[in-house]
Amino acid sequence: FVLEKFNPEIKDKNGNWFTNNSHINIGSGKDISIKSLAEKIAKAVDFRGDIKWDQNKPDGTPQKLLDTKKITELGWSPKIKLDMGINQTIKYFNKKYIKNL
Image (cartoon, rainbow, N blue to C red; front, side):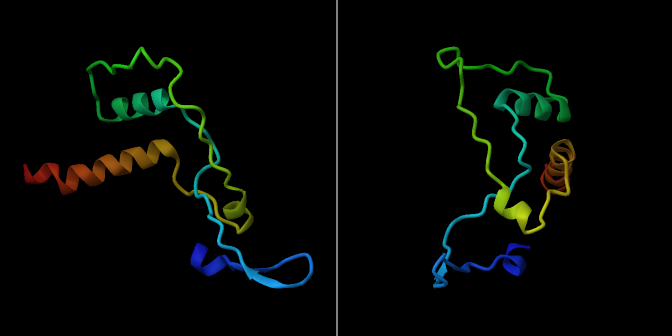
């Protein structure tokens, strides 16, 4: 999608062309905590154990929500919701690796 839609050559305010080498974030634009993600994955794989957290770092990682403005302005949006993506990934790995055990 990006290769077809993104033009890295842009004009500055004086009309001069230059190459925009900046990155493009790809994501949903929605945030989820590591704890919530771990719980979703645990539920999806029917994990029945305990998830242990380092109590010396109770605040965890600061929020890291990506700015997806560039990709959405190009017309891209995610087609797979997080829960579906987790389930599809589990099915893929089960099919590819578990059957060979």
